[in-house]
Figure 1 (cartoon, rainbow over the protein chains, first blue to last red):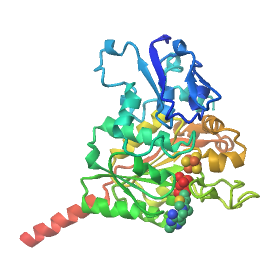
Figure 2: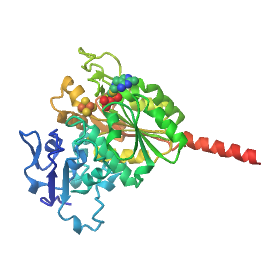
Figure 3: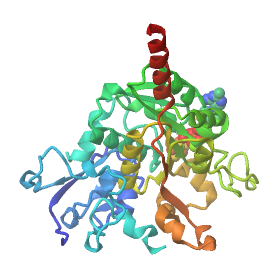
Figure 4: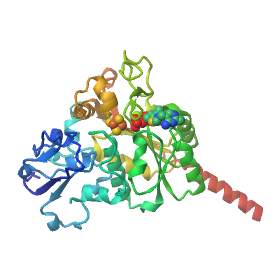
Amino acid sequence: MSKKKGLAKVTIYPDWCKGCGICAAFCPAGVFELRADGKSHVVREEECVNCGFCELHCPDFAVSVTPKEISRRKTDACVDPRVEAADPSAGTDPGPEENVGTPNREEDHGHKKA
Amino acid sequence: MAQVTQLIHDYLRHNKKFPHVYCAGCGHGIVLGSLIRSVHGLGYAKDDIVLVAGIGCSGRMAVYVDFNTVHTTHGRALTFATGIKMANPNLKVIVVMGDGDAMSIGGNHLIHAARRNIGLTTLVLNNNIYGMTGGQYSPTSPVGTVSATSPFGQLERSFDIVDMAMASGASYVARGTVLHATMLDGLISDALEKPGFNLVEILTPCHTQYGRKNKFKTVVDMYQWYKKNTVKLDRYRQLKSEEQDKFTPIGVFRDEMRPGLETRYAELRNKLQEQRNA
Ligand SMILES: Cc1ncc(C[n+]2csc(CCOP(=O)(O)OP(=O)(O)O)c2C)c(N)n1
Ligand code: SF4
Ligand SMILES: [Mg+2]
């Protein structure tokens, strides 16, 4: 599965963002930038690969990633597959091409190399 | 709004002050998100969940989420939870504690809840420090930790929460981190579905009280540390012992499916009733 860019809308809720920098540091596509106002800003939305990492890791629930094609998914549009990933084996073995751009992407950066 | 964030917002108490009180980058918020996703994914009704929390930054989770919540006293969350579970075994009782909460003042309760194997799902948010009270070292602070109460580095050997829970008799024991959020969703979901005493230790950074004093420039550095220094349990077991020393294993350490105390108690009650009626 090749990762397509520009398929998602990325939104920061500035009132809730505390500028911790997790999204900016870990986004594989460099979508975010921390600015002097102490908030994260979406600067390269078109690069977003819709991996959902920022959304799963924002401690303040201040970022959302909305796939533009969500309504075309064959799954019920109300059910995001990331929400359904609650399975202990999920994320243990991302396939080689799945490494970047899945909510499991921390795996390939983490202990894989160990 | 995308589904994941929208979902979490659906479970928050919007009459409370947001953004929540946690410091920027504090992992406790990620745990809250993971817990909500897990509960939602399993399809529990909000009213069937009781979240019992102690006191500490971790304990404040009880304020923000729209389950039945009991914000108890420091160290005693498990005692309240034990009473609730015995009184109404149909409730899903989740206990949220900090490392200070669970391992110092509440250490004895943890040992005995695990020994009894009472049906509780316990999340221990281990940030290796007393966050809320100004950064005193905790029983899980590594040797050498610089803290408000150990300015020259603490000298005591620290507890391993997973080892402690297993030695005490918990039937399900796991460890995850807030960086491995998908895995954490899986561990919490798994624990919620198991009988008996389930404990998930969650490594979560406190930069304000721990990181800053212990050579982590930013909170992001602490997440990077989890990335570099944790390893999945199956892989950990394949490492040579000198290699193992460099890593903290994460995963499911025990999964025994033993019935909880409340189930054994109900069985006894039924048996005695039958005998009396015979
Ligand atoms: C009986 C009692 N003793 C002490 C305290 C003070 N106190 C409040 S929170 C806390 C420790 C918090 O550390 P931890 O449990 O690790 O939670 P964290 O804030 O790190 O999440 C202490 C000692 C208290 N509230 N009640
Ligand atoms: S003091 Fe530590 S544990 Fe408490 S909110 Fe801040 S970062 Fe989190
Ligand atoms: Mg703590």
